[in-house]
Image 1 (tube, helix red, strand yellow):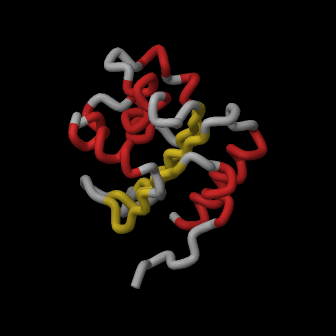
Image 2 (tube, rainbow, N blue to C red):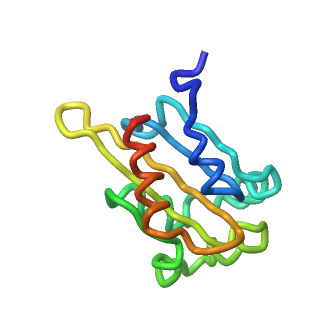
Length: 134
């Protein structure tokens, strides 16, 4: 049984093109994760090892808070974000939170859609729900 069997509806409704959430990452791997990105994108991303060059994942490991993908294009020499657009992931956001204290765990979510940039209210809602799961 999943640790969080009740995933927030906001993830799917706000991120209509898909999302990936990794919860309570310690050294390297999350205690729980959920990948709702299109299968074609996941296969391409995996086959080409894009995680090693993804500015969104890099941002999530270096920061807390939130950022829109449009803010990360300058830090994307491998054009991971441009490639994501070819799979319908035109606009995106990354949210990251971490625990304070001895466990120092990190959770992050990557959210995408094809229709428009995420607004501040949507970013706040995604962050609230991610913190609740964390």
